[in-house]
Picture: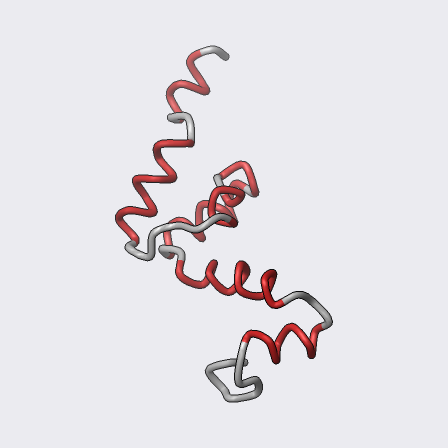
Length: 82
């Protein structure tokens, strides 16, 4: 909606949708996530680390991947105890 010129600002979106500017800003940042991280979140649900990205995160995709890897247990670690 920002790209199409429907709204001029995050504040305009918030007012139109009756949500806070802060929330709109946090959600819009998710558009900066690396495509493979988005795929992971969609495939695995919130346990894939989405909650981490509600806080400030790096814009660089490689740094996002490193940050996600640091908080998510390795697949082998999860299956080893099964």
